[in-house]
Length: 278
Image (cartoon, rainbow, N blue to C red):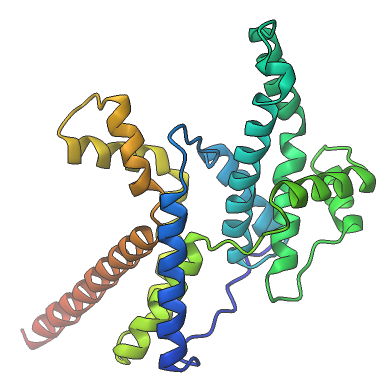
């Protein structure tokens, strides 16, 4: 299926509303950073992100759905795994390594359904017409070799909703980028935010897929250490989870790429003009 472009429209929001939205988003970002646990586990690995991006593309969903699904999956898996590992059964003195292995095996078997359910939930939250119904979901999953019933999907959806206390409206990296570009376009009307937005999609996807390598390199650079300690890695989580910082960084990279393209285009025009003169 063809890739669907985002339907986000810029320059239609009043400045005071943008200011309030930016303050609120920054507040939520800080609250999220302050609530991170010391033993934070990241489930946004490359294969999972690739799978969600694939589902988003094949189902012709807005790109925002994919990034929202990644955040829903991250929050759910942390909560679900924590609940399973802190259950009374595993907390008894008689519990052994086999019990924990059984927990991970149980999650592994259900993980593909959890991933798809998060995409389905995210599609229902976006203000667009493309919502994945259970009938369409079952048909699609069968087409890729997964035999899943409507009841299984409904149970998976209810499990995720309960685990997250039905709180699904969590900002994702693309949310930050869109708002920052809105503010940038409002403050500097000459900035081609629509073009930057297209570039930001490519940059953000690249960062999402190579997240581990990028942040590991950044950690080693900032600590000036090829083998950062556990304490340094734990403290660095506030950097890897800072979506305001990520949004600014992605826009900066997109702006640099755009400026290079313009420089190359102008250089080409200049050289062609000189050649014609000679």
